[in-house]
Length: 199
Image (tube, rainbow, N blue to C red; front, side):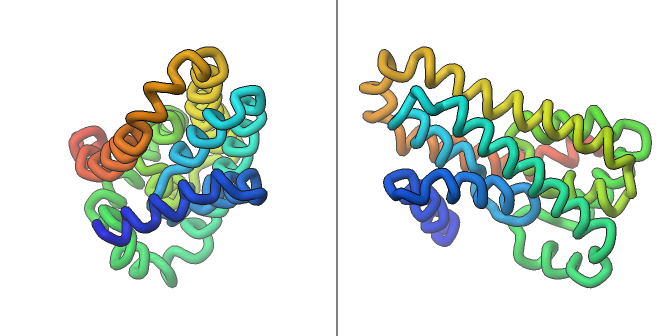
């Protein structure tokens, strides 16, 4: 877990640089295919610092995440036989058992599965890559991704835009705890996937 904490701190540090918007896009992109830290951490920090730009940040985050999901889909579609072993070895919780269960469920519930994974803390990368492996229809995949990812990031942005100044003192005090909880929930979700999609 030490390297996860270091990655978390590294992501958070970008919020105070002139490259924050680009970093948000890139982190959202890679998180949808292989990076372990969710972009919410950076989005929250940036929206708190500049509430007026919260919706713009959500747009950047959504665009990066959906494009990253397409990259994950491409990995699954064209390169899984080559790179799959590395994902199982180096990505926490990305196990053959979980991946197989997700891929099988795609056959009948692709849109619902993509939307659920995109909107919730369930690690989206498993589903974007599995979508490519299962060769699900691309247009429904993209639409579900946009609504799921957009719904998630815009909800966060709207709440911070509306209540940012009022709750800023409390979030400043508990920010590290709140964002760490997001990361913890994100990783715990790996272990819930077999229960959710295993039946």
